[in-house]
Length: 85
Image 1: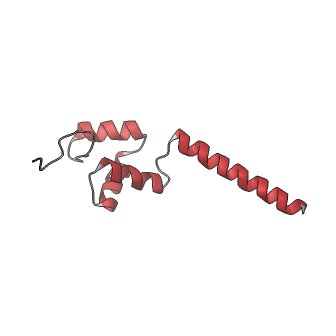
Image 2: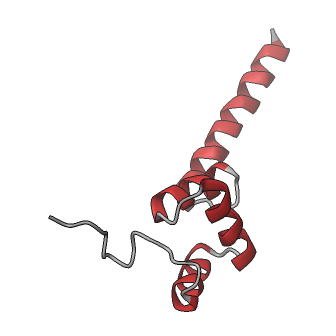
Image 3: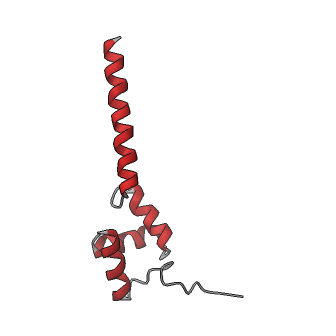
């Protein structure tokens, strides 16, 4: 029976400068943003922190950006169509 997760990519220990450096570079965020996310979520779980940062608009993926731009484009097209009626 495993009591603790041992995969270094599942948890972020803020006192471990190597992990902090790894995740801030990977996500393109500041140490303060990472620490704030840990405090706000009350978690050191990577998926929880990533979800929080994404919801705050701090972290985004290329796919997410493309989806956002498509949605915005569709909204603009629908507004133009409404004005023509």
